[in-house]
Image (cartoon, rainbow, N blue to C red; front, side):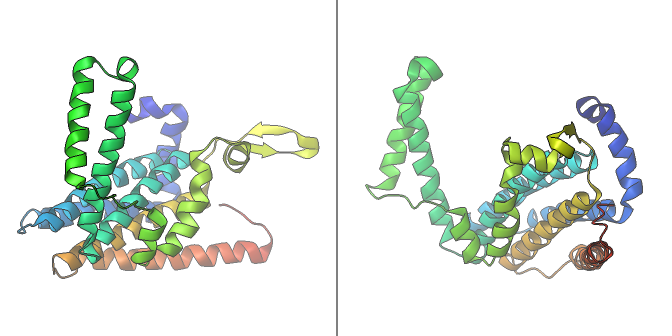
Length: 274
């Protein structure tokens, strides 16, 4: 099915990438295995509202991480970058949930505010978006949301502010903000990803996966999973697992090699992406 979706180029990438980057592909699989290991542990724990929310966010992160991995393995690096933004958003919420007891109330309050806004869309545009029965359902949701707010204004959840509260501001600035061009089809984003500009302004399409970018994105995904796992284990007062310890070491060794490779490329003046 995946081959049919991603086409011949995707099938070639799926064969080429594991041969070209075996250590990074192994890192991806180890990260996904760790997620499954931790979820199995969470099902054996007693829960309250806060830990239930954390577990639900961890499940959501698993979905997004699997999607990002699949996209990377089929050479869809632009789509993988966008998907990693979704992984980061969940990571920020998850880490706040694990480290800040007040976050559960902030999160649920903002959710009711969003429901109220969505309900208003349905009420204002019933003929365009909703049937009469559906519009009434949204009206009831709006009444429930307003009642739950008790006349107070829900907090606005700023991802940047939340990232800062749990020490993720560097990741927000470096990856989340700088990767925003992957989510928008501006001319700059096309030049950065899909176009090569030649002499006298000539252009040609470049759709091939980039080696350096694959290494960077796979490493970033593994790092997000490490951070998320450490936060969840801390919330549940659980010891680090063998899978987490192994993934940390694997990630550190690959990161050091990747940095050394990039520095050597710059020093040689090749700037090679190989």
